Length: 328
Image (cartoon, rainbow, N blue to C red; front, side):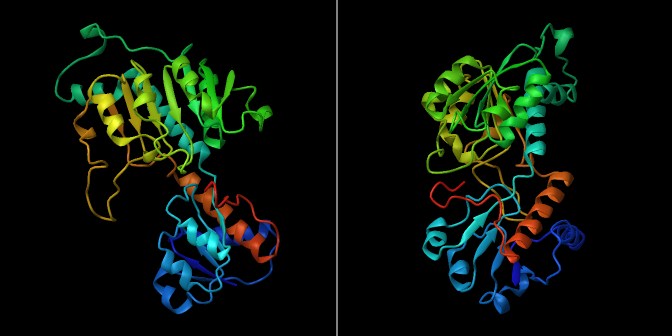
């Protein structure tokens, strides 16, 4: 079986591959090829590793049966072509711990004004007790999680450990209820997002980007967030770009922490992450889509990727198959 790395693997990929073979008790052979070898093997590859966004590449791959993303996001993949050719798509969800930690750090940074205080003290300006400007504790406050999947669940665990009340939405509010009952006080269907926003001081977004979730948070929802805080670690377009900028600029939102954006640079280039000047606002914390990018999550994601490909080579059922209609 031939496998193409559309995305480059980590340096220790062979070590991870051997570990996957050992754990799956696999004695067979799989041939791996790198992106620069694509032209010579594209007709024969059965598996591509990475989020292929070019439909023409997929069409050229006559024998392609599986696209395995080593990350959670699959929104760049052209699912119209995938459906037409009957190709399986799977993703890796092994970054939930990393993303939840990042989201929790952003929430703490908002509550303690850490970024502003650091920025200002470098200019010799003092805040805090000297300026009679207290921060606040998150203990006893309410966190609203929009999307109680693997990341939302890990966020809820951490919030509960800090004494917060947790409410949230789930597409199927009755599914996996046992996994959530110890960490989430109230669970609502996705149609009740407004209820969660009204009850919460912090609103945490952890949903995939689909046709249903694009602009899920727009002017209407943001108008309910007066003096509240928004944290987005899902995808940029889950929140309407213009409405978010206006809500921050006009002081509707008390603050926001955003890890996912609207404009991404090509490798090696510099660019702002939006056509709107978010970087000029003081009430936002900006991070460069780094929440899930940790040493540990990379290793877990790629180990899962290799194990799933081995399952596929053995003719076994693979994990995390993406629904091509729902795109998650």
